[in-house]
Length: 245
Length: 245
Image (cartoon, rainbow over all chains, first blue to last red; front, side):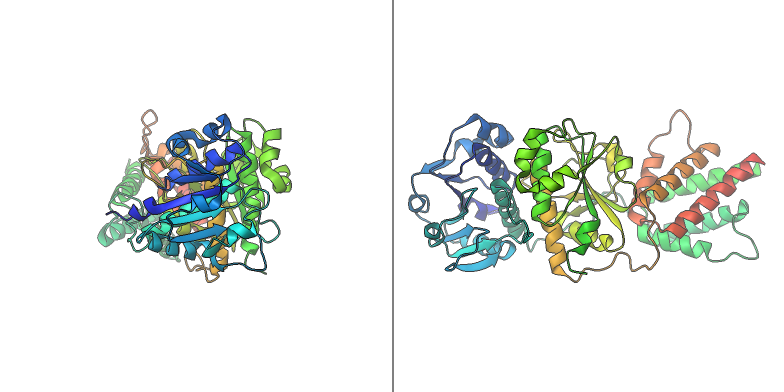
């Protein structure tokens, strides 16, 4: 069982989506994060060419979407249900930030079926739909304009679900496959730089100042790779050689 | 100064977006997370009714978008540049996961202007555009289908920027009190380096190879300070002067 196995137990439910483009974009958002189960409750238009256009390479997720006439049917078999809504209501389930909620969903999905429910574009989740949810998921947003597009909300939720699966895994080293230079290689390059700076008269022999120290500091931040050291030394060599000619 | 102040110093740059709908959706994504500065490099269609439709309540962000003919113009005045690309290339800047990158961007935005660059829908960032970036930002995605919609990528990046502000205690970059060099200062230094490498014969005029690109990448990691740029340029000047004597 790999770390993303739990995502297979998570279905994403869109309640009465109005714009077919959003259905397609939601399918794409799910697939990019390794989710694949899209459920539609009473969609206004599905299937639809606009949904297919926006789904791009996620036509399989879109095509496999299940449709139900009401939310209860869509939630059949689930052990844990979360709902996304920007709306504040009087009586809501426990409100959880999306990052923490994702951890809960992934943990629950290790045990059984989980559903995450999204409301309509215009008015979010109804009070009745919210009443089916164990958690109300909140995406931290600009209070002056918290109105995320439906598929954008799905994207953030799906992204956090994937991150929750990845949590605990150790990140690899910083992306480069090159070999970082050794201490001696860096020191050799700095000595070569100093020699070159002296040869051109840039460093005054009696008032060397802190030029080399400054350069050492900068290269310390850069953490040069072996090949970069070779380039720098080749360049210094060409300066010194020209000087001797 | 509130915790979201840093977001005002962050511009989001879309390189040659093909679909006006994505421009509008990106504007909306930014505004929902409290960002407001959208920059377009050579957009295929802007302004456009489809962009306005997808922007929804973010018409102000869309309408205030700045357009430039090339990326360097769009990056003027920036101290720190990140780029998003799913593509793997030979020579890339340091790769950072979007969550960690957001922390870096917010910290850098406390000191000055930051740009986050997104490539085209079809092919992502060009090698030349990537060479302008200090960080390559990676969104953890399904390796079998990592193809996020452009506006969806913008949404995740913007969401993580907002979360990074909420995290509060962000480390300052590099522990330095010196002023980081601007994009123009670094570009000027790189051009000067190339000129100097050519003058000594280190770069063969007909087979320049990837030497300058390698150096650009190293300096991208180093993020030189203004005074370090001055030292390097003083050194290059001394090499060129000696050559003329």
